[in-house]
Length: 250
Image 1 (cartoon, rainbow, N blue to C red):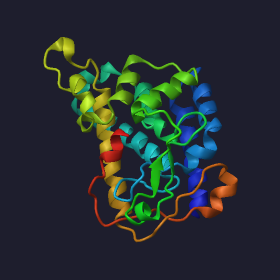
Image 2: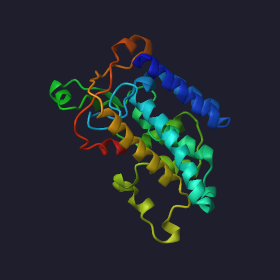
Image 3: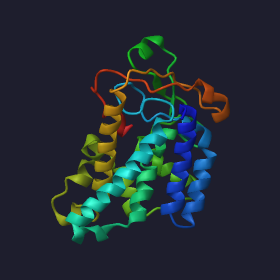
């Protein structure tokens, strides 16, 4: 299967996850949002630098699918070990948060978050994408939540917290949520922790996969899937894992 076919198939699988796990009326709204963003979402990378995870066209969707799979796997493990704590969130809430945790990396409704770097100096040093200067600055979780709100898609308190806190303590702003000792300052759900673990494990796996390869990719403009498919090559790789988590919090 060519990489173009893989990218198209991954997006198809992403829509299937929504149709399988998300109930109406959110299902239709989420499918519409994803289809409206399809040309850009399909080609979006998951990070900007070759030392980080999935820094190649199609890397975003590949990462989201992996986080969804990891969440389901962890849910089954947690259900076996921590039976009494699994009633703090639903499986739909878990999948919704996994699907949308990095939605901000697609950008806003009109502009990409990552754009190809125009500096050869930076590209030679692994920075093949850069953050789009046309966008108002937001951390990725905040833009994820804002984009859902713009599309009129409602979400629960559990889903809000899971998306907001999915970077765990790699994001300093999450400390007040995740380090509370007194009951009134502690999370009432384990969903943000489960999603963080799923995201963390997926990122590690993607880093290992990328660094086991020797292929090189070229960033592409994502104006149209059809017009850009022929420009897509294999993932960018690098020999170092240094800084791999920087992209986790935007």
